[in-house]
Image 1 (cartoon, helix red, strand yellow):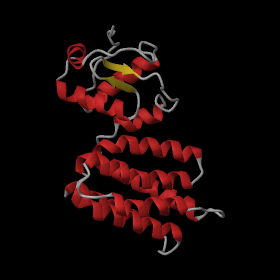
Image 2: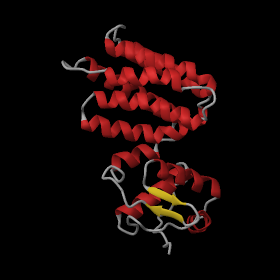
Image 3: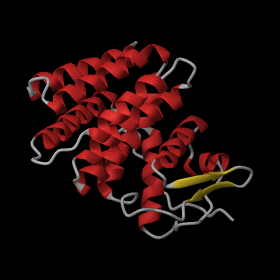
Length: 234
């Protein structure tokens, strides 16, 4: 049976969906919610919190994307039994609460990815074969028949391969979380026309990592941010 949530006053200066995510986070941290617990329905959440359906659904999508809640068809929403230590990390929830600032999110992601490439380039024993293999497979697999969600999944395989090539567990965990948070926004603007841009971006990354292009971090970040802004606004 779903329980009533412990709810503090909502800060109306922020986005309502982010405030709902914060409510769930606080209830997990204070023990009012535990793994396996059933959550109130969307309608019940609307009534308990005093908000409309739209921000509730947005919050649910965010929480589902990062693995905090699980939706069981015909049964309802549950706190997952497989909560990782990262799901409740204050840093992760801080990223979630600020994820509606698209400009800042794009900027942060690009600086982070330049860090990844620099880490790989400066490794004495760098191995980029896995990244190259993913890129080559994407050329064949990214077709116009695929849905935006499918295109994003294939797109992210490349970025996960870059993460793994750093061999740094801190970077890998933070990177995975960043991509999970940004994934819903990527799906929103991903379409068949963006396939060529995606592949060109990945080829650019590969050329930088393999040393075929000069690594000028300032110029690279500027170019990457411009590319993502253009994609979002297309």
